[in-house]
Length: 325
Ligand code: PBG
Ligand code: ZN
Image 1 (tube, rainbow, N blue to C red):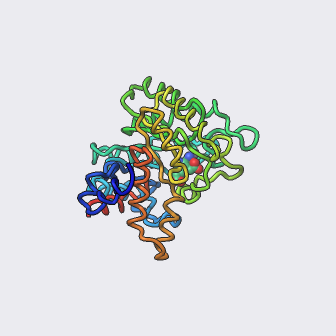
Image 2: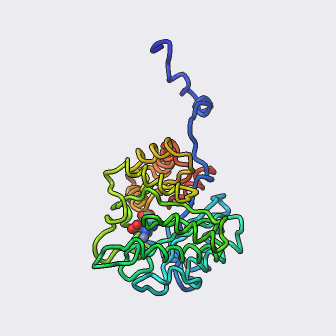
Image 3: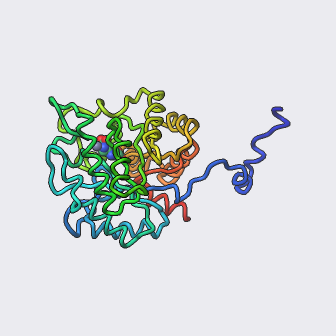
């Protein structure tokens, strides 16, 4: 039955009517705030490519986390810049490095906050690749797996609630799950970067985390941006291997993938609103070209509408404040 009997505008006339038929909503409880931790004390460096975000020493990270907690954001995602790098990234599983120290300090002070740690090697290797190299710039999958397991267990030992491996090695979820279970951390969850694309949108992050590959690119392990059926295969594999949460990354240019994953699988789905997406919004807002608050809330709501259950975003603190207004 069409016009003039059915008039969609009838239920759009007032805010109360609109709120009654609203299908999706954004809540502070959907947000995960990424944080970069560095060696030293009293360090709070603004990240040039991510205005409003900082590299923190552990003491300063605690101050930032106080704000996260006060705003009601349920979780943070920790990335680390180590005090030393080598060819295999051994600082990644050193309990005295920033991610491990920050995890211990934050969980001691804020036991309720969900602390998620990034498990990858690119910040920790001299060459900036996400695994061990063989003949030039190829990452050897199977030699990388045991190293990822060590990272995982180190993070769990320091009190992480959840580990998020962002390296895109085949079989890593299973290896990490088994390693954690064997070490007695069967309650530590795994958030799998299941469909992580080889994206130019990670540029600002690599400056922040000092993790750009010194040669080559990540196309040999991250997904081709042209693929969506393959994303479903990746998600299926990670679920089979024991992922508790699956992820699509980046978010904005991949909402079709988000939607397909959400309707195909019965697993909590996370999207990563990545650094390049954030940087574009910030740059336009700083120029006065867009209304930052409305753009951000609309974008984050779009992730929910597409089927995401949770959102990793550098906008988390601002969005939480705006949602309170
Ligand atoms: C490391 C990692 C990257 C991001 C998260 N973990 C960069 C990359 O894969 O090169 C990107 C996050 C962002 O752009 O915000 N593997
Ligand atoms: Zn990496």
